[in-house]
Image (cartoon, rainbow, N blue to C red):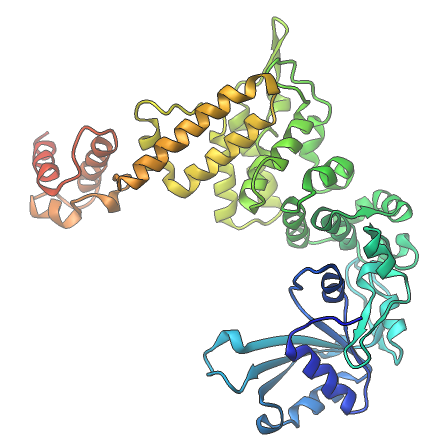
Length: 465
């Protein structure tokens, strides 16, 4: 079997082999290459000790290799050296010519006291011993470029072909060593469309509480990848018990009947359909995941109809707290929270709503809100969907038209600026802000033309008020 790879990966393994060592590409890059996916990184494992790896590449000259080589001792304690290659045919500032590879000595892991990383490692001579310590069989495959063959002691190739995620060895031990592997399993299931083997799945459920030992940032990274996977909704549906470990706020959504003819599903199932119906962008998927999380505390039933007054505001506060806890960056958190707070809006293509929302939200976030509303509606009872989707489409056409016309929606787009107002005698500070905001409001509402002369005349009137 032949695997295509960047030239740098073959150069490194070939160089190590010529120096008398074994060397293979290993792990996720082999799995992705087998599946016809583009690997993100190419990791290399070798029988050479880290000091020997560094020695081999530090002694090579540019003339010998046609590469400028930089050796970085990134993780000597755990056997890892990073090799940075820059093609000699390119200039020093050409980032496209740079390739980076982690090269790690064959090793076995010591005790995992923190449920995340081994306390120590022992360097070994056999690649099979190294593969034994890895998480899933599909990731425990090495490949030799020189021999064009796979090293697959745990049947990873069969599991890839059968679309199965299965632990190497005892699943309970694997998750007990590193609980983040639980999140990796559900993330891979979402991204690859693989099912999780029975004993592996049972060990995940039994050990879900171990996620409490994992840093919020690491869970967040895996959760984002899960949400953006093609099978996110089905994975969330099947493994909600695991998601509850770090977002317990979702539990009241389970089986919560909406008791409303506009809704076919309970709140949780509606949420999963919304996730499925929105683009696989992390902000949009997060907004869809959290958009109705405020419904359980807001539910009332009046004359046999379920109502959820104010759930948008309640949900935005819950999402804000969860995203704080999971260490999301402020920009992502605030964007998602604002989308949730506004998601109950009913779009109307007539009138000034499109102009005003473009002013308040900006084009990018209004587009996001439209996507969220469309996904929300698509996840409701099909008897009422077509009319609502048509209204959203008409509103989006209005937004498109306003953008194409180059209309003014922000202060920076106005035909006058602060210097023009100061020249009229407007004092800097609150007064200049008041006049600029009022001019913008009039322009957005279509009451004033966005031209310098018109705005200057109106500013003179406002100055006299």
